[in-house]
Length: 489
Image (cartoon, rainbow, N blue to C red; front, side, top):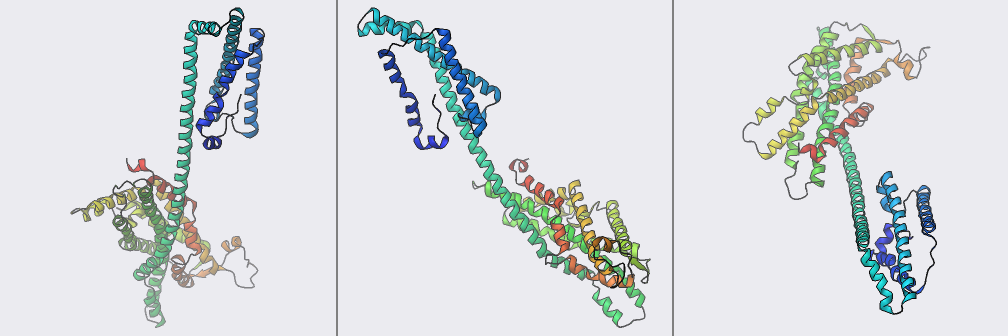
């Protein structure tokens, strides 16, 4: 029994050579049968020897697979265990049929040739044998033809499976590369927009004028200090909230656009209208201005009210430790977020994107095709912003942001040099009993906005960009919008 060539060999030699190699032996077998009288053993002994050889061949194939991990016949790689057993049984039965057929032909040829001479007389028993067993020959032909066709069908299916697997692998690699590139774009976009956000916050919460007034030693010094206290805490807290919102909102928007662009580049190459034309991208991404404008103003109002409620009663001379400061910030955050839950805006998502009614009303007349597509993108984004998963991700970012803010503040709560409690370990620093008057904490808080909203990658921004929940949420968004069947629903 011949071991089939591997796929590369078939590709080189060609199917024609492969068929000739396996069929050339047939005429020589016929010549040998006519010229050589074989003495067969008893039928049972012969079949036993043939079956023993077939079983040995099957065992050899299994041994080759156990050593190399490759089946001699590639078909066995794509069928189940039961199908393999049936294949081996069919192989053994086919060999037995060939053996019996050879024995019968040998006996008929040589028994008749001994009795009567002549070429035609010699062939007559063979012809009679064929006529008597024509149904068997037809069945055998149909069986062999069926096996051949089944083999060709299996070969074509195997090739289709391999091509499909290769195509899926290349598509997945291409999509992964596009996704990674999109995430780098997200990070760079966040860093590029932080200066604009910082300037907007400073514009609405300007503490320089109050600082200048304090230098003139006015009569209402305490009132100015109270105003400076509220503004300093408000703009640092607003900076934390708005930076976290900017990070997660840009992740959502750019991954939605990235998914559409991937489909435009890989699916809709047949001249159809692109899913996200450049004009639509520009209109859609310009919605981030709500966070830098009306949303930011509303956020400042809410945070400022919470700061006045929590820190307003505190005296400038009151000393606060790092733990006290953490408690005050937690209280402010609770007031802000609980207030959002009970207000008409329902959640923090309103500060990032306006209500659906306002968006549609502003474009109710004269809508173009691009406007309709932009509204569709905005509605899809709004659905994501209002989802529980997004709320969880935003809450995680805020928790990490306030924790990093406290880490920055901890640098100013170090014990004095030479103090026996001084220690450089973070654990001792966090638990440090050092307290500072609120009047000394205010200038420190006031300057934290430059660290929070820094275009140079700082620990604060890097922590937000590297949060695993943010990465996983971005991957889910991209996966959803880069899958064709999702967009067709």
